[in-house]
Amino acid sequence: MIRIGIECEQLEGERFGVGHTLAQLLDAATQVPDVEKKYRFVLYFKAEIPKDAFLAHPLFECRILTGGIIPRSFNVFYHILLPIRYFIDRLDCFFFPSYMLPAFFVGKAVVVLTNDVYWEAHHGTLPLKYRLAYRLFCWWAAKRARMIMTISQFAADELKVFYAIPDTRLVVNPWGLEPIFKKMQKTDEHAHAVAALKKQLGIENDFFISVGQAFPRRHVKEAIEAFGKVASHYPRIQYLVACTDKYSTPTLAPLIERINRDAGRRAIVQTRYIARKDLPVLLNETLAMVYVSDIEALGLPPLETLACGRPSVIADTPLAHELFGDEGFFVKNTNDPDDIAKQLSAIAEHEDAVSRVMRAQETRLARFSWQTHISTLLSLFNDIARSR
Image (tube, rainbow, N blue to C red; front, side):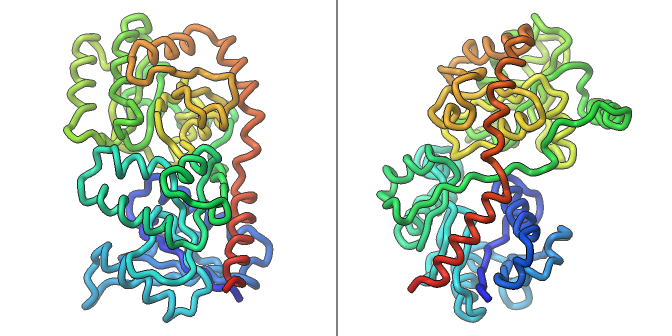
């Protein structure tokens, strides 16, 4: 029996990028036939075990490491308790999905590491304590982990430059796409769900959408300014900004307020978070996802939108062409709202161009499979467990 420890603090509470992908990875693992006969995943939580149904599978042992006399501190959980559990629980390997390797960890580890985390640590606007933690413990992972896993060739190429990671310690294993992201049948039930969500959010007709954490590198501010430039031309179109403001000073809300005031209507709707179950419904109905990011390791929202049958406005980067090919609504100058506005107008006015782009891009979705991902990951765990 191969015993794999997994740090699962990102599954607790409200989930964002790492939490969502880790949940899908674990769920996919339970669907491998007879997986529990060869592997045991020991899942470590800081304060609570979530109620996901897949956690009841015999593949998993779930453990809470803090509470009582042990403080519910992330640093205690991550840097002290997890390294100790590696030895106490007789693990063959530890999987860290959150980009870092604990300070005192000395065993066999696989760490997910991405180029965008490097950029946030060295050039981003996160609070200083987070940037320092990423700088130190991502570097530690790059130097000490048995294997680094990343999720695109573009990310791998950048990591080789940033950390001098040799090919022998680096594997590219793209995330899969959650099955809920798919084209939905236009049934009465779907229409009622769409109407209810639109009413709840304040969407009246057609809309663009942005989701995720609004780091400056994702240019949500410039996208909002771009929509402000074309809002008067498309009075029946709104822009749903479902983003957490990650600028160093609050930026999005005052900008949206000004644009709406100038437009004389609620042209831009802001909400901080959309429930995961509701997102596919909205993505099936949106004109396009607006995700103009300079730096990503993969960038799931445009892929999820593509799976729902709709296009995205994205930055013209090597990663974008790796994922989507050469047909797309690409923004060359991500700092220029006019450049973004051109792509918004192209989608609003040219359904034939949208159809052409969708036909070209949909053939590329097959690469992003959780079954393929978990198969590669289990093989990696197997090789590391048998290595010295």
